[in-house]
Image (cartoon, rainbow, N blue to C red; front, side):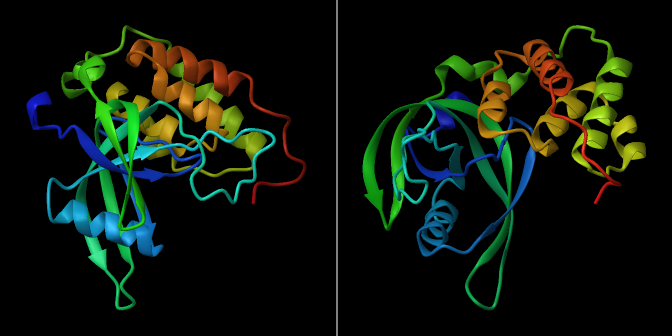
Length: 213
């Protein structure tokens, strides 16, 4: 896929605390009628969906049906989908490239639609590898982070990942708060993403009491 293949307008799937990165694979369950409609329309056209985070303000009700959005999201392509008997979907979005949200253009069958610009993120289609980084330090910080959060991981799989896959997978699976997820998405390139990820792991919260759940 090239920049010329990207439509100027896409349907949006706002999800707080969920990160999709270029080359990442994100499994999703879709059950709300408006997002079922979004999936159906994407399947009937370019199979592209714009995943983006709501930007909650402290004084706003999180039940707001149309919260303000961050200005950067990630365009994902529907690469697998299963329709359940009840009409809901289990699907996988594969990240293509990031986009800037220019302006929303209204609702279509209940979901939000926006004009986007991907020109600033052309490099996502042919991502340059990160500069050398301290992989042992990153993995050590990750293990400490998981211990503090009471999380388990298949360390053998993580340790076998090459650097590029590691730097896509770790930011997506770590349960960082929404603003921290957004900082990882906004990192200019893989080298910057390493720096942000290392900082977030090292600044994680206090250790949980008791054994991991």
